[in-house]
Length: 344
Image (cartoon, rainbow, N blue to C red; front, side, top):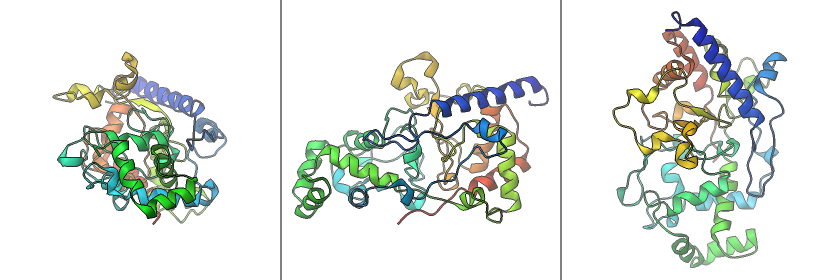
């Protein structure tokens, strides 16, 4: 395909690079806080390449984020607390298992009573670096995202009134809220604590050490895979500290991905479900590639079961390339170097 349409390939890659730069310039929050604090990107990835630098930046240390330790500790308790669900059977960790890359590794998650969700659960790891939350970007902050599952009928299926009744009846937990917030449990305080904990889930990897100058941190194949990742144009969307999470993109730029599906679901319409704008149909938040080797199946519809398959699909539909098998193997070797250590 690439050999028959060389101009289309070049045009597609240039468009992706332009969209990536625009996404960085328009990136409203690198580390979104409910209080409204913002940290902007220092430069675009294209500018970094021109300077001989890298379009990807190392993850910051947790210490450099200056998180509220007491809120983090309380948020961790709540993250694993099944009382947030209607029947006390599910916690946040049920769908966002930290031992499985921050997901449940299922095509869709199971909620209370066995109810099935409609979309593949995104990872909670490094979610604090996403400019929006959820595949369709409907939540602007982690606080806003944290409040969604509690009242979603196919997730936790509860209500804030019910959750508050449980939490306020726990003297120890009520005391912890008093110590951290100066008052009893409330929906907003639960969201703030959960969001602060999620911000602490930063997973630096060998690749970050390599970016920091330790050239022995990656194997020759992994380093070659990163070069191909940039050469083929993957970097146009997967850039910055999170290798993604900083822009929206249409799924199927160079070929119609959804034309090959037997049946479309509401989830397939992506950002359109939020804005109602025709141009947002099939547009999604670009996912982070951090820990991607740990989070199969892939894409919003869980249609790719292996990392190699996902890379080949991206090559075809986003870049207009039939990637050589050897390139796929090298790129996936690089992607596996993005698996980091999960905070305990």
